[in-house]
Image (cartoon, rainbow, N blue to C red; front, side, top):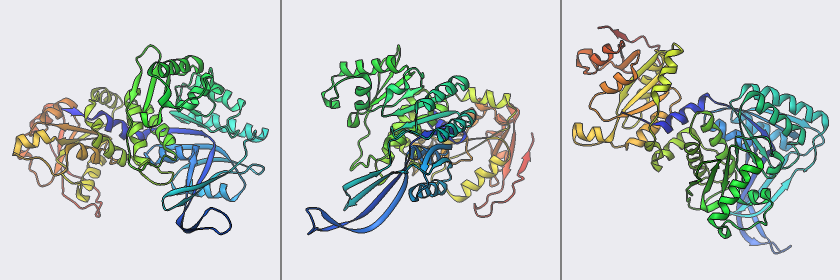
Length: 485
């Protein structure tokens, strides 16, 4: 059997709580058509067509955490102004727990982009780069203490507008040591975080060169040896566990002490929209690491998440389902094998009831979803077996309409599914013997004497349950027929 490790990681995003602290921003896009040049000056006259508002900066990272299924708390400071109210409204619309302090003497950071026929005309920025009022700073620190106690990971989104003061940074370092949390730092001024022992720093190559005190050059002008030297210097100077240096169209480099440098290949996207892609990358990286992924797996997941959002206009987000579909198409989903046995041991130790079911899932329907929901109601952990393309061809001479990786991704994207397993055999007997479920659930169109895997279920001490077929709209209370040996 083959367990899909990456889909299991994305599935565990739903169990992660992340604290995001940093500069909250409101990203505005005014879209229109340019039909003539203004008689008042050599600029286009843009006839308005639409207006969009999005959370930006730290709040965009929070929006991506929420879209990917994680639980997020966003801590920042906004002004007592229209932009601050609009930002709160956008966060609420996305189901985000905002923890925005209001400073009546501060303007909310706003980035207004004028777009004509798909092309940027101008960007107009508002918001001061000034120190926090002492009372606001103290309130921010107190809320940090609450947030650290509750979360699994922390994202520091520092655009150097003054929210991350020396006192706030020092408190983040103290809380990291106290609670042993993952801390990811995305800062325009990395030397401020020297000595914090951050888990990950994520500078672009320009920020990395400035942090190292180099004369800044384009990435194309840096040799491989120079990039290697830059990354190693950052690890030593800033003191982080990992340094991830992004190189624009050349991809990224991951540096870790006493480990070879790992290159993350670029993900080319036609007509990319790069606004907020870094926030998406950091959000997905934080969730993947918190969910237990190895760092190299985590950065590949994050790169795919960023590739999804740069294909969308505006300051976009990526959902868990979109990410799984992208992973399936990229082939990453099928490459990694999971250590499911470790997870199963933890479930059993905690006394959790394991439910297993299986199918081809060649086009997920409402009845499939209703059946899976009913199966999950019978226990605590739902594991779904999916017939592989290879197995289907061997069994019946032809495969499924939907490729295996996409079928796995769609099933794994369902919130009620905890793990997905592909198997090559005609029946899931080997899978059942491997995972030893408490219950094996099948549809009511089967009879137990027709189930070749029933003997394997009884062999591992489980029971077979037959559930009636149903439509998603009905959502009945399930009390399927329990068939004992």
